[in-house]
Length: 157
Figure 1: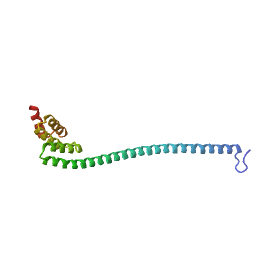
Figure 2: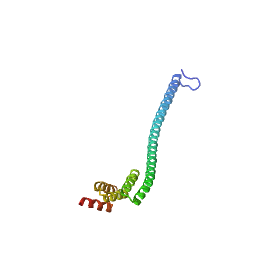
Figure 3: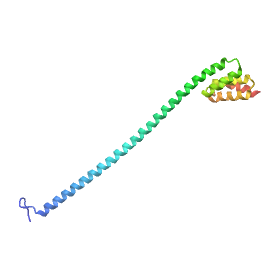
Figure 4: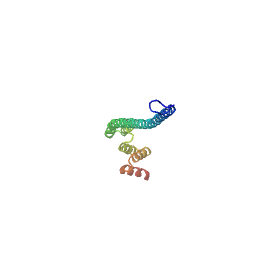
């Protein structure tokens, strides 16, 4: 039965409306799936950025800890230098040995202190201990010629 206004049968209008509704739902579904894909991409980008931020935070914390450790070591070596100076001024070899060892506990990587302690020990006839100190100085500083000469002199005997 045709529509009174435009002469189109009612069932065709209903079909057109149904197609329009189906098209509308399809369009909404398509757009929502596109939106979902974009959201997933953005979520993945956010996740990657958060991981990078965490990695950088850890790196900064490690650098800060290393810097703090370095400052503590520097302070300990500054205290050790006082012991080394007193050891050089000591008149009694045993006192000098004790001061060098005390300082080396605070600052174990001082090649010169190991060398100087080795010289004192060698002068006291403690060649085995002296050898260890010259070897320690050379381990820290392989180019330390005087420590190498002292070690060679001990090994020749």
